[in-house]
Image (cartoon, rainbow, N blue to C red; front, side, top):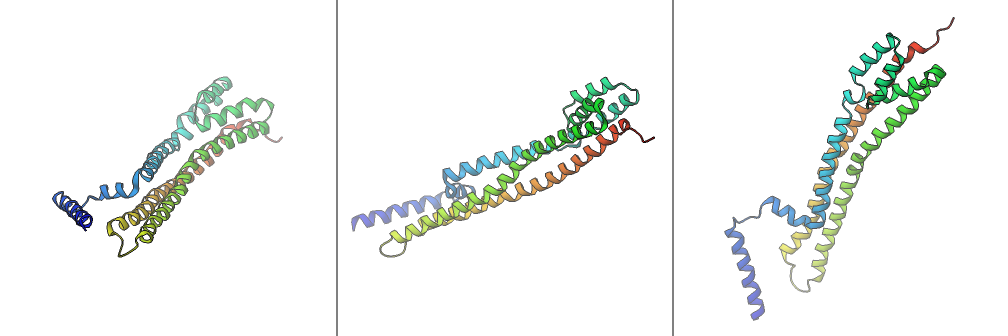
Amino acid sequence: AQEEEQAVAEKDVVAADNKSDGGEISYLAWATKSLGWFYGLVFLSLSFTLVSLFVMNLLTARRENVVPSALVAEFEQHLEANKMQEAYDLARNDESFLGHVLSAGLAKVSTGYNEAIEAMQEVGEEENMRLEHRLSYLALIGTLSPMIGLLGTVDGMINSFKLIANTATGAPDPQALAQGISTALFTTFIGLVLAIPALAAYNLLRNRVSRLVLEVGIVSEGLMSRFQKKPT
């Protein structure tokens, strides 16, 4: 009996402390406590990775990094002046998608126009694969986040039902029961919050990259078309 009275007194002290602190726990503190250190670290790491990947892919998918207008104008000037070496050096020293494609085409143009086009297509496929590979990490985060949230949901519900099963008599402690349910809900919520922008960013950037890759093909073939032999 004395032990029960002491437990009740301790609960009253905790309740009094909560009221003195403002009556209600803050939303951030509630979320942090519900997630725990494991899910908190996992979701925090995914959040920073998502932001980093989005910024990196956004900068890579800029038009000036894929099809720089200055490179097109200067390359065309060199071709019109019949300065092939200068045009090749210009394209080779340029780190853009178009620069790699044009340098590959000029390197093979002496063997024939068709060979130059094939070399450009091969380099274009490699560069496109590199861009798609980097973008795929956004889709990976968009797929993993709700799965981790589902894991937290199952984990939280198991803990709640375990508490109910271990309560021999009477009702389980509502605060302890709410802890498992909070873990289940918050992990699902955070997982969806990460997955939705990740998948949206992936699809938007992939469409932009596809348009730019198509533009690279059109511009590069247009610049190299002067080497095509005209039928007599």
